[in-house]
Image (cartoon, rainbow, N blue to C red; front, side, top):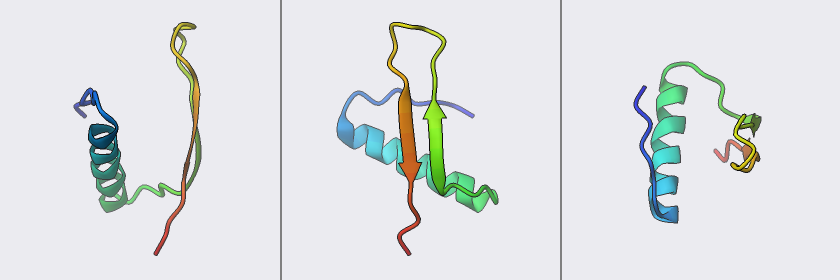
Length: 54
């Protein structure tokens, strides 16, 4: 998988949209919470929640 490097909020939204849709098409359950932990202490950790709307 190639990871794009978004530099704006709009590009981040587009990248997340593509990633979640591709995962769904591949049979991955994408709802729920995900902890995004980086071993680099200078990079913040994130808690991402994905909610299925339809």
